[in-house]
Each structure stands twice: as C-alpha cells, then as structure tokens.
Image (cartoon, rainbow, N blue to C red; front, side, top):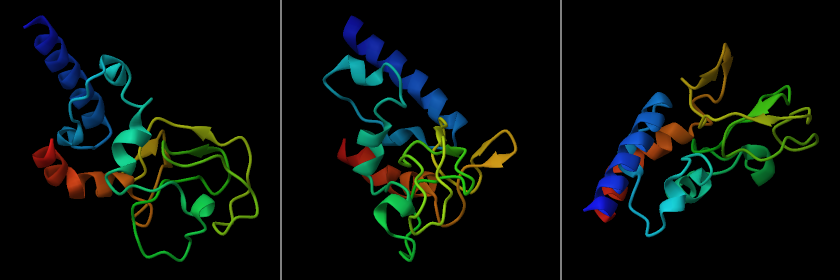
Length: 140
C-alpha cells in the first residue's frame, strides 16, 4: 500500500507540473524505478521521443520536413526548448548559434518564457504529445 500511494502522489505531482506546460498528463506511465519520477524534465526525452516528438529541425537537417513535432531553438540563439539540441550556426534553420540556454518548456505555439515564444505551429512538441496521449494511456 505504501509504495502504491507514493506512486500515486508522484503521478499527481507530475500531472500538475505538466498541466502548467499545456501537456495532458495521461502520457505518463508507470516505471519500475522511482527515480524516473523525481523530476519530470530530467527524463522528458525518454517519455516524448517514443511518442513521435523530434529534436529541433536544424540538428536533424529537417527544415523542409512538413511535420510539426519538432523542438524549438530561438532564432537569436538565446534559448531552446527541452527537446532542442545546442544551438549551432550554419544549420538549415539559419540560427545564429550561441549560448542557447535550455528552458523547461516543450515547444508549442502557446509555449512562452516571459514574452518570448518557445515554438510555433511548425515546431510543436506539445501538439504531438496531445495527439498521441490516448494511445499511450491505453497502452500502459
């Protein structure tokens, strides 16, 4: 009973955190190891790449890809979404490179940090997660 109640409490904590970021919590599933629940963003790559999310367009050389499930790097190279890789100049996205601090947001047209956007309709990991949430919830 103790173990199940702890998992339930952790699930509700993660659901709360994810709701702040406009991601439906049903994509979370149970793992055998409690450490994967300690901080939801540490293992976000594991959870969402298996759901069809991609890293940013520049690192994947996917700037002409019509898909929408990519991470976001700011055009100025100041910040990037959770799934985006380090900003580099000379890639197909035309970014400037630079410090490129990772912010704790998945890319999406409504995702922001302060007044700065973290995604758009073409770079929308939130949308991909929400599109597959019911299939993932049914699987687990």
